[in-house]
Image (cartoon, rainbow, N blue to C red; front, top):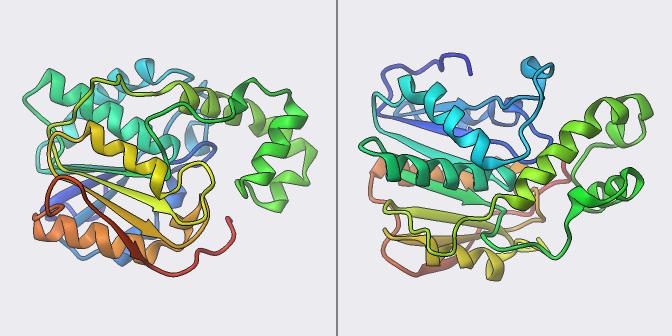
Length: 257
């Protein structure tokens, strides 16, 4: 993660990507948020500039490394945002920091993920079936799915990410003592509003759920989501109280790119 461009901001927002995603997903987000929020995309091993590093398959291995490597950035208020796999990482890292103390995030945003086992364990599928599953999720551009060389190059990272995502379930008794906001796509068959609401049982602080129009990759239409994130972070008010929501919000999301 390179040093973000807003050192005078009031709060840092560390962003964690979905399976197969990199820090580039979040590079436009600063343009949607005012100067009080400093967007900090976290680049995980196995992608972009860290492509040569082996990707992690267990959140329990990844989280202590993230805590140590990001510690120098926790010198001002900060929050976590993660989508799909990234949401599970964000929650696990927040839980780790809260247990270790005294530094903890001011807010955690989990998006497009659930704290329960999914109906399909994609990471165990043979390569052809895994690619079919990725296509059905609208989870990769056609340039990737139609390029055998690129598939061969990237499939190990995708499989590792799915392994992490599908095994990174929080302890049923885990309760995060900070405000928690969840986002769900109205047309997401596996992480829709009903399923995502399950995060409320892990919220020791205030909890709020927002429904955003679109499928699993609704965050590619970042405006509606970031309007909420920006309001929460800039106001410092957080959700209104335990069990708040769900709220319908936003426009239809475009196809994943």
